[in-house]
Amino acid sequence: MLQLLLDAKASINARRKDGKTPLLIACGRGHVQIVKRLVELKAEMEAGDTNGDGPLHCACYNGHLEVIKFMVDTHHFDFEAHNNQDRTPFDIALSEGKFDTANYFYQKSFQRAVKSLQVEETKAIQSTGQLKLDINHPTDKNGTTSLCLACQNQNLKLSRLLLDSKASIQGHMPDGRTLLLIACSRGHLPAAKALVDNKADVKAVDNKGIQGV
Image (cartoon, rainbow, N blue to C red; front, side, top):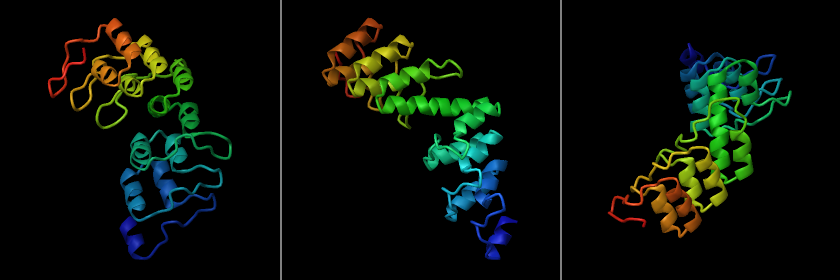
């Protein structure tokens, strides 16, 4: 049906009276393949309806997580954007009881705070306790954990916060470097000491056989 309409030169950015475009409707109904096709065809992605709801807001009302992940992970949509009622997609997911969706945004918020090395923001998100937070969830495709990022950037406060929160010290980079090896290679003695105090393996080596201690 979609292809028939496209072949008939139907506008992919046409609006209903409520301001909803085909993309917003598809997001709201969880039709991920249609969403992907409309995005391929350069549908207007930033437009909101008369309520100010964008694609993520629309998907969150019914917890369409596959659509949400496509928008955020692939197209880097801002999951903290506000509609006309000053509600974010996260707010909507919580109010509608879509806790899998809310947990996804919660995890993303935590990872973003860690990546920007915001210690207080990280602590605030972590202390919410409202949802489940996987502190060891990779922050990128290389499997880099939050603690690994903190060690790489020589951020002792953030490293200690994550260690106190039971972050795993077993993570390593694709080249085999453990957290301790990273801290040692950066000359970050306080972080290295904190890792050793938390039973990091001092005999571990990277893929080239280099040892940190």
